[in-house]
Image 1 (cartoon, helix red, strand yellow):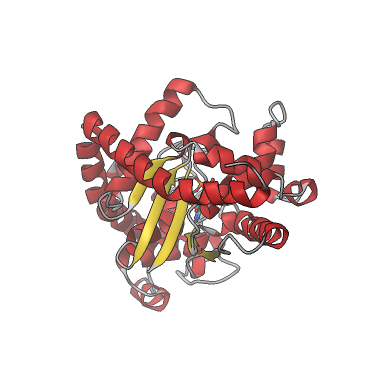
Image 2: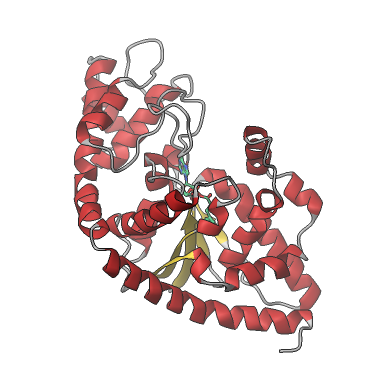
Length: 328
Ligand code: TYM
């Protein structure tokens, strides 16, 4: 059995990108592994958040992860700030991370550019907190979309540096990234840009709790490419993105999808994608509505999740304290 760790920020309802790139795999990996998943609220505050909204959104994200199939009996699902070991490990690892390597993180550069009035130290050291998340549980595999690959590589480098300095200790984790387009679902309005929770254009991202009609409307409006053929190709990023989405939800291969829409126009295809996605997500929406209505139950699951996470991570943190020479 392998140990799996991954996290998601509670900054908005998960997008189709979050779902196809990561959360769907989180759910599937539970069958054969020991899985630990976190709603990473500590990461979220590296960008200015409205406190009341963050609190609600953290509850909602927890319920949504459950609605997407995370079984809190079998796996551990917890809120990051409920386990103070993450903050403590962050400090230990900060002292094994170089300024230069953090400066090279593309997500830091992008976010610093997007929020020039708030280039805070947390935004800069964010990948160290993430490294701590993973290393605290000695994870073997980390299911992520491609945009987090650089952070995972940094995690490996930091772990190796720590191991070199203090003796073999951290397990070196591997990224688990979906093959094909699902590793990077693109914006519906600009297929050269990643679909993101924080896109200013509401038509760019599909959020997995949106009503059926809204989902269909967004797909109908999706930017496609010149020509009229439904074909997966590098020079057709819009259609290829939609084909990836359709293929995952319908269970059909790209070739089968191409054949299904041969001779039909983009209009038919976009409608089919919208309907397929909306129908596939209907059970997630229903389950979410059921769970979100029961705050007490969610709070009790959070508490148990945090206790279980703490128990595992406490051991790693204690050992790391010993390794670096603290009196424990
Ligand atoms: P976050 O919250 O931005 O995204 C959560 C997961 O969704 C994936 N993802 C995508 N996959 C495919 N296509 C897209 N358009 C797309 N957009 C997002 C992300 O790659 C991610 O896997 N730093 C992380 C959260 C984190 C974490 C961790 C992840 C904190 N600690 C430890 C793994 C392990 C983040 O901001 O993800």
